[in-house]
Length: 105
Image 1: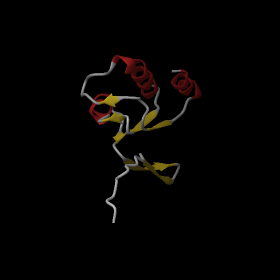
Image 2: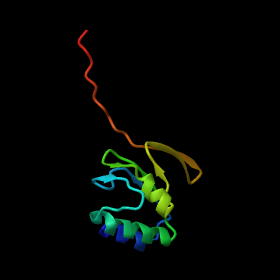
Image 3: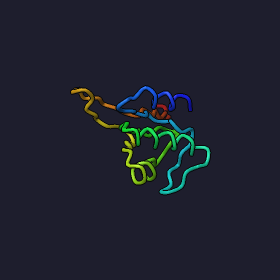
Image 4: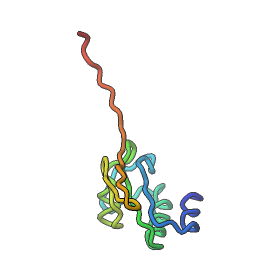
C-alpha cells in the first residue's frame, strides 16, 4: 500500500500496471474481493487525482475489463497494446509461456 501512496505524493501522470498486480482476480462486473478493496480504493484515488491508469492482464488476474473498464473507466489490455509515450511507440505485452510436450519423433 505504501507504493500506491507514494505515487499520489510523487504526482505522476501515468501508471502502467503490467499484469499480476492482484495475486488472484477473476473478474466480476460489480464485485470486488474484500482483500482487493484497499488497492482498488488507492487506484480510484490516483485516477481522481488525474493519473491515467492502464492495466495489462497477467496469468493471475483475468477478465479485469469487466470491473475496471466498465465501472472505473480504466483501460485493460488482455495481452498486449501499442501505447504512445512521449512521441514514441511502446509495445506493452504480457508474456505467458506455455510448455507443450511434443511427441517423440
